Image (cartoon, rainbow, N blue to C red; front, top):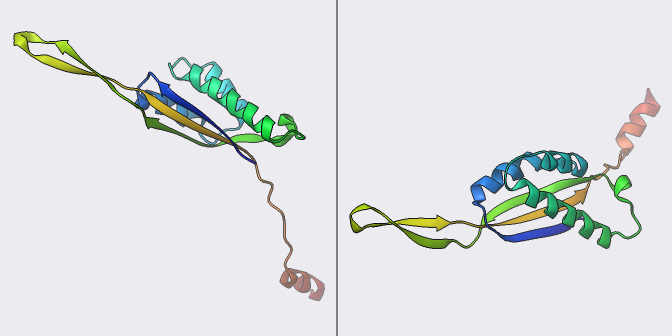
Length: 131
């Protein structure tokens, strides 16, 4: 069963946050936490906190299970652009340059690694019995 955590209105540009999100996409939760803990980029601390929130949400949904036994991984993480504050900066000769202060929204989905069930077909059973 998957758990979702969302972070909205982060005051960094979506491009900078996507760089950090790409590093942990598809990783196991323990490895992703280690990556984020030692990453120097600005969005790493906020994503680490978001990942811990997603793990906590997963614990709330699955009360009988333990995290150690679950083998969690980051199923999906995506960064969308948020609202943009628009400002003007004085420029030479009476002009004004636009300043766009960007923000972003991050959505993180954590899930268990599915163990594939081995299904033995009847054709392979008959072939083994014949030989």
